[in-house]
Length: 139
Image (cartoon, rainbow, N blue to C red; front, side):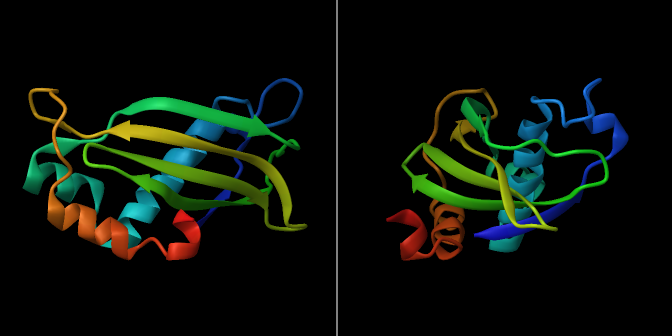
């Protein structure tokens, strides 16, 4: 699990003063990027060196409690599944102040080449991602 802290800005909120529901997907993306960076597989480097991309093909968010302007939240990101040509990240969004679970969810990503065709995840990248995932996280 890789934690990423994010301060909720005013622009993240809706008229009701809570984080707009779609912004949780942005929070997931920030967590995913930091997960990849921590694993040694910075997204732009993987794309440049291996010619692959990871488009989102499925996304799910379950909302538990609202986040509000100026809350410090922590996105906890893990890899739940690593297949030959896809990967699945899971996320928990927690308010730092009281450790309250605000949302959880997942995204599934295909591995595609520069021509947007499905392709196998390169072994060097898969090895980095496997190294960043503990057995308890994949169980």
